[in-house]
Length: 64
Image (cartoon, rainbow, N blue to C red; front, side, top):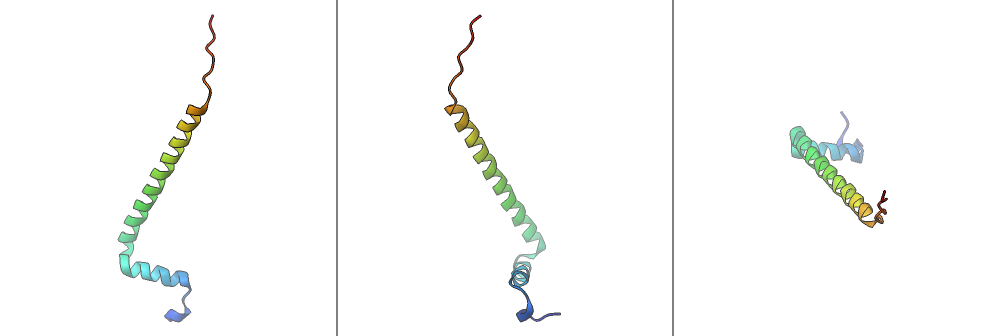
């Protein structure tokens, strides 16, 4: 086993996270983060599509 001085910064960060949160805590907060990310992306996409629809000029209706 390597000493703490031999670990990379990523390995030290992973050890810190595991020791502080545990695996289930990490899973829970990762899912919360991803759900928030997805909700934000959906809101941005919806806002862009409504802005695009509002800025489109109305089309002339054809009378027969």
